[in-house]
Image 1 (tube, rainbow, N blue to C red):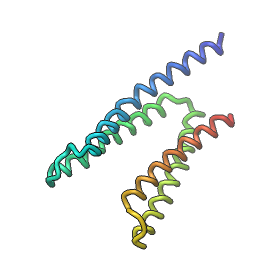
Image 2: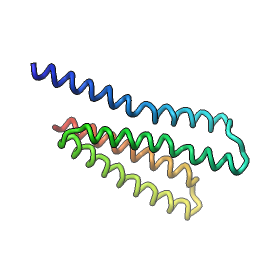
Image 3: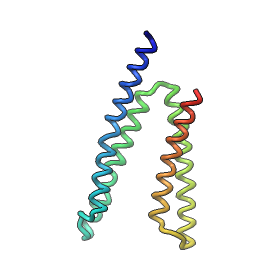
Image 4: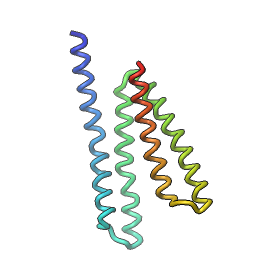
Length: 135
C-alpha cells in the first residue's frame, strides 16, 4: 500500500515539474524560431529588445528549478544542489576556456559560451541522474 502511494506521489511531483518547466521551454523555442527566421528587426532598439527577451525563458526556467527545490525533500535537495554545483563548476571552466580561446583569436566567443552553457547543463543532468541511481 505504501509503495503504491509513494508511486502516486512521485508521479504527481513529476507532472508538476513538467508543468513548471513547460512555459520556459515553450518561450525559449518560440524565441529561437523568431530569431532563426530573422523575424525581428535589424535596427538598434529592436535588437536590444529581442536580446533582452531571452531573459524571459531564463527567468521562467530559474523559477521552475526553484519550485522543484521547494517541493523536494531534504535528500533530493542535497542531490540537486550537488549536481548544480558540478554544473556551475563546468560552466566556470568552460567560460574561462572560451575567454582564452577568444584572446588567442581561435573560434567564435558566442559559440564557445553557448557550448559551455550546454555542457554545464548536461553535466548537471548527468550528475543528478548518476547520484540518483546510486541511492
